[in-house]
Image (cartoon, rainbow, N blue to C red; front, side):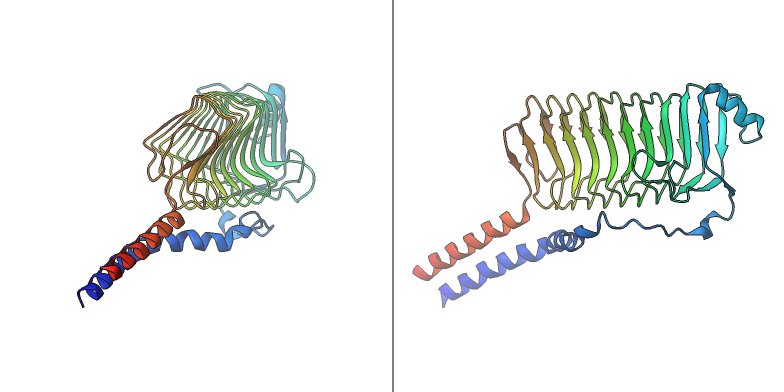
Length: 341
């Protein structure tokens, strides 16, 4: 009789632990059922009811500082292109028509300008067509625009000293926000969901701040590829395939981010050296590890729910299935021990 009581007590303890952890298991398994839809959410439908307060415009193309002068002379913008009085394009709705070209294309400009509260959608496709496309452009501010349902949402190509803040770049076929060879840019407080990659930074982009963005339900949430000296802080990268991904990227700081319930990795490093990965929350990810391959000199500190360190393979962390396995083995062993006694 005493033996049966001990067995029942052990089983109740195990069941209690499993019940307490069940919400985490449910969240993780729910994503597994929907991960195939992450990249297939693009369509050309758009809620025009939200656009009634804005003026409808054709595509915009400005080339060079002289192009700004002509654009203003035609009555299309305000300002003078200076720091205190930048050119301003605002409150426009631009349907790219799905044909070749970007909704707004600005090239070869170093004057100060701001694009604010514009909606761009249905841009042309591959290659390099976007809702807003800046090529060889410095000193811009892109504020509170909606660049969804394009090929790329917002694309900066060899453009430095720009600010992207409060924009929505979701449901694009390619990248939500894409920096290519672009430096000293602030990408802050944007939302980039349901893209191939939420925020993608590549080709030796340096000294960029990626802060406070929401990048959920993409293939990659935030990805650095061949970059150095960037800071990724305070972002939310949940329910992607991979949350935050560093490939061939050195001397970056990844701190204070939340990367939960991603189908594979919360954070992954490949051939990336001397990065600091600290203070991140990594819970309920599919593989539940920080993966490190072919890396040297990285520093891991205070990443919640995940162990960290340096090695040539996987760094084990909070793995729910592993925990269930351990608990099951313990239950079986204790049960056998009680029966013998």
